[in-house]
Image (cartoon, rainbow, N blue to C red; front, side, top):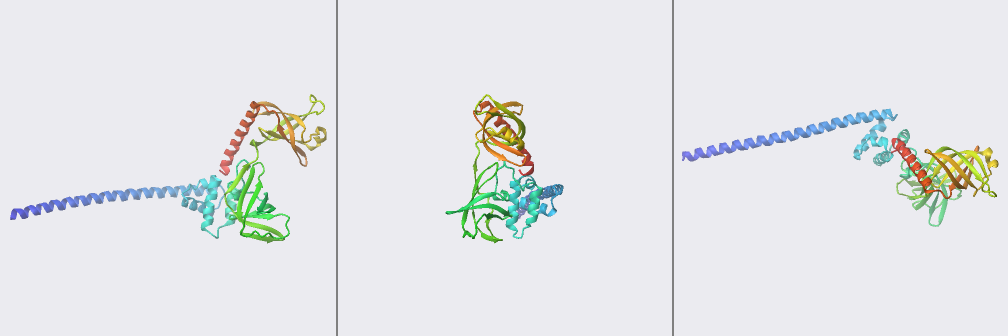
Length: 348
């Protein structure tokens, strides 16, 4: 009997020892996990603190306020975005600002506009398509229509939530409040844009009628030009071909202001207009050097724009050779890429 009791005590002692050892092992493992997580979170917090310090330093270098920096940092991290992108890429900046506005009804409008301007996000170059209605420039002309009504209009003003379209040359306010209208406009050197919006209010201001419409990014873009063009400043020699005697050519110097594979815009002093006597349909030769290649192309005048000191002719190339067309296309593409790279440094 005593042997059995001794055996039970021995077994119990061994079991208790094993359980104790197991508990100690579990405790050590848990301690190591907690320590690892603590160190990981500590390093993460330390990194975030360092990044924020660097971010706020960048904010100061860009001439932005500390409040602007705090807003951009807070709502970038809230969206899971890199805060530094909000300083370099317009689309990222606008996403962050939209989140800030959504969560803060009393948002600081002046601060946003000042920050946008200092970052260079207040304008969009013509070679970059509009991303949202916020990008439409003030005084942009267009047409607003609803059912069988069409109004000439212009963007009168805009804030962070709404755009305000002025209806031109109407004497009575239209019944458009609460209705969805279509807006169409031609952006110079870009494309035709078509969008829709619900009229929140029709504002009467000094006899003017203004439609208040919320911003959004759903816009249809219709490319107008067959060929992309790029602004240039190239010396050119223009030869007017005589209608009576095609072999007789009158030469004059001018400057090219833009070019595409389809044509070129050339400007000359207004004082030379009568001497040159170009009209719509006039045929001419255009000689210039483009990216190391001498070009001699034939064209036809398709439009004429007269300014105070210069007169500019839109010239469409006729019977252009494929090798010349390819050279111009390559030049335009290369120059556009340069501009995009420059723009990315400002607007992304």
